[in-house]
Amino acid sequence: MHSTFKLPEEPFRSTDPLLGFDLDPAHRAIIARAAALAAGRFAPRAAEFDRTAEFPADDFVDLHEAGLLGAAIPKGWGGLGFQPHSSDPFALWMMTKELAKADLSLARCWEGHGNAMTLIDGVGTDAQKQRWFGGVLGAGEVWSCWSGEPQTRVPGQAARFGTTVERVDGGYVVNGTKVFTTGGGGVNHAILLVSTAGPGAARHGTGNADELLMLVCDLPNPRVQFDARWWDPVGMRATASHLAHFDHLYIPDDNQLGPGGAFFAGKWQTRFTPQYAASFLGAAEAAYDYALTVLSAPDRRADPYVQHHAGHMAIAIEAAHLWLYRVARLWTGGEDEAAQLAAARVRYAVEHLAEDVVGHCMRACGARSLIRPSPVERIYRDLGFYFRHDSDDQVLATIGRSVLGEETDVSFFRSARA
Image (cartoon, rainbow, N blue to C red; front, side, top):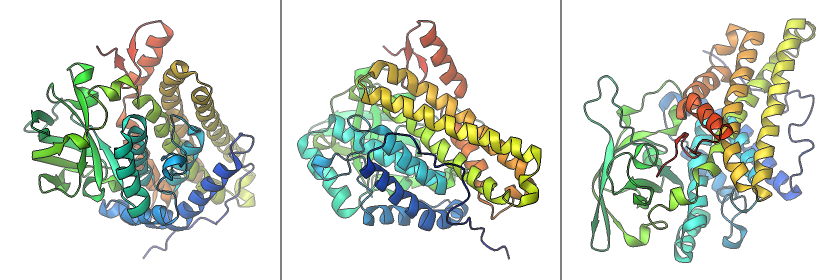
């Protein structure tokens, strides 16, 4: 039986990755608290959550008990004030990075929760904020955001995914299906991005922008059923991103978040995109720490090829931090248009930097780095799958269109939406 691989509490590092960044000391302390929790509790659980494809509910209980679940809730409402649209997004992204170092699936679920808090703060009413923020801070309620309605069929798929929305007295009725429902049945609330124009939601819809609604679904709900059989991926298994069936799901007007089109009007996705990069960086940094530990023996350190691999990894890790810091400072400096365009750049750049780090780790450490219980085996699978969340070809084309002066959708990396 394999023994559990455990990195030392403080793996060798030549420098602190946050050295030189102008983070508020209080924010540094919160990030350090999250890092300690991730290393001490989340990382040891990650392999089992991955094996069973189980939502990491215990991790969210710990986050709540540690006072971290409200990170993206404003201080005025009792949270930590890390919301990415009016505070310091770099602090939030560094917290996300620390969770991703322990478990990339956990980080993805955390992203969805934080994104929901950001949307509630950005477009919700005071009554909604009081109700929903109170549930997070008081009861540890966990949120997610669900949009996935891809319209292209794959072999073996009998019908297209998608939802329809009907206006009724006092609210809306939702029918149909969504996939990639991060958190599946493990969350307490989900913001459903649905369109009165028909299937496709935010990413794949063809209707007018103002036809997209954000409707909050309270869970569990007898009108929402999950099919876990659909979710059997190579990586990111613990996100539990099941197929959801909505059967005449009634959502009252009180649960509509913002007016129609608010998600596109605020270009909220551009606030969320850099967090993908932060998660990529966290997974890459975990592989980097593993490599530095494995390669710490004197005979390995003296190998010039090992030195090359270590140098490449160190530069890539530092470059990723610098990219995220630049985008954050564009936001905090009020350069919103530049920050929205930079979100695509950081998403593209850090994907390839992270991929580079894991590649150098595997080449330096050898095939044994891909044998369980090595964490690199899971990191390799999770990153490979999560990179596909967006097509980097489309992301790069978006960057090119902006450089050439062409209109483009900076939220979902395609031609501009009407």
